[in-house]
Image 1 (tube, rainbow, N blue to C red):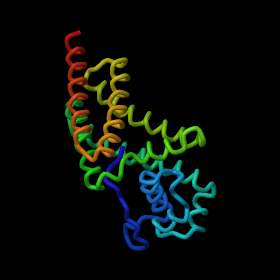
Image 2 (cartoon, rainbow, N blue to C red):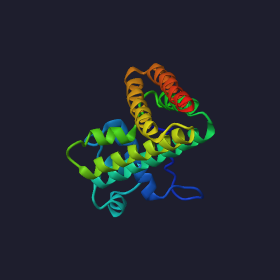
Image 3 (cartoon, helix red, strand yellow):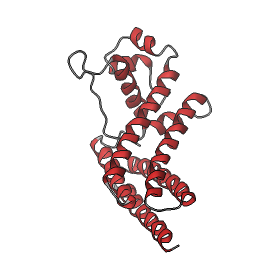
Image 4 (tube, rainbow, N blue to C red):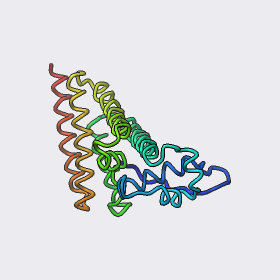
Length: 209
C-alpha cells in the first residue's frame, strides 16, 4: 500500500535528505511505477540527484540490494500511515474505512500512478531474488500485526483477529490495485464498506459469546 509520495531531493541545508535516503526513495518510486526490470541504476541516480559512485557506495550489491531497501522503505512508510489511522479511530471498522479513503486520495493525487511499491517490486522479481521476496513478506507480516493488535484490542478473539487481519490486508491490496487499474475510487470504497461490516460482525459475535 502507498502513502502520498515524498520526493524531497534537496541537497544541503537544514532538513535535507541524505544521499542514501534520496536513493532509496527514488528507487521505491521508480520501481512502483516501472517495476524492477524497467528501472535502471543510472535512472535512480538521476532521480535522486546522486552520482553513480555514491549509489554503489551505499549499495554495492547493485539493483537487487536497492530493491530490498526500497521494499523496506515502503513497509515503513505504509506502517506509519496505518498506525496513525488505527490510533485515530477507536472503532477498527471506522479505521479501515478511513484507510481506504486515504489510499484512494493518494492514488488520485498521483493520477493513479503510485500504487504499492512493495507489491510492484516483489511481483516483478518473483522466483528470482529470495531476499526481495523475504523483505516483501516481512512487510505484509508487519502490517498484519498492526491490524491484528487493533482487532484484538477491540475484543475480537485472537484466532479470529489473526484471520481477519489477513483478510483486511489482502483486501486492501487487491482493492488498491483494482482502483489503480480502473482509475476509480469505487473498488476501495466497496472494500472499506464490506470490511467494516465484517469487523463489526466479529465484534458483535465476541460480545455475545
